[in-house]
Image (tube, rainbow, N blue to C red; front, side, top):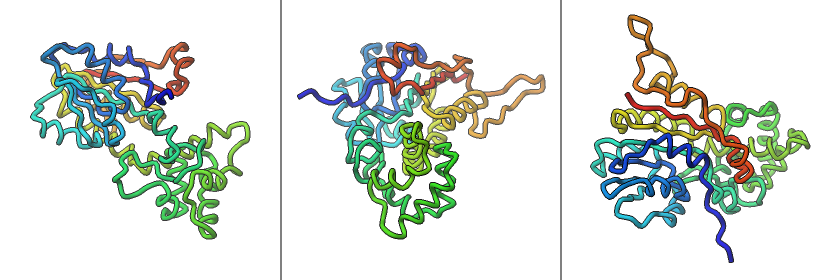
Length: 302
């Protein structure tokens, strides 16, 4: 029986070009997952190079690379700086983050990431985390649910969906993906069901895993762990992430506030390598439809 694909790395060659890999450099892939990007990095490293692969999901451990030049770190990338210090790494020459969810997660009904399968509403990337999606649905106020559906899912019917969830949970707990889908379906256009249902599940996943918060921590940490001339390479999949990464690369801070010197020149610790965002080619989208919303941004630490 053929093994299911864990993940197909998006924008692979563009990421490798963006990292500008030195054979003897030190690199970190903070979203190791199926190891696709990491293996491509390893192919470009010499004997003295080293790669650290981070992932908070221990399922990714099965994909680790058996090579003395590779170190797997079981951690959320929010703690990147701590783990680099723990491993005695003073600085890295490149940092890669692919913020997409692996096929493995979407296709595993037990993880509850997709409305395509009926399973428990879980959605935790780290199975040891305390709060799962069913708890968010059960305990958040109507206002909190409306806010996360609007902010993270960009759903116009977020208030009506939130009200329906609160009403439904009074009668019976909402613990499965099918139960949640049934509650929100009346507020979704039939011809947009796949797209809008995916947005509902995306919003919940972002909240469960605190994805925006940990991304902010990663970006801030990148300034401390990157060597001068080191590359920051980030693939995002929705507008909130992309806006945050774009503003950070331009300004060097989470608020996106650009500081200028006396002469009006931008004073920032990073410089964008690609002023225009990089997106997948038509061929790549045909080969890997899940890459269609990927956006790649690259910056150099000055």
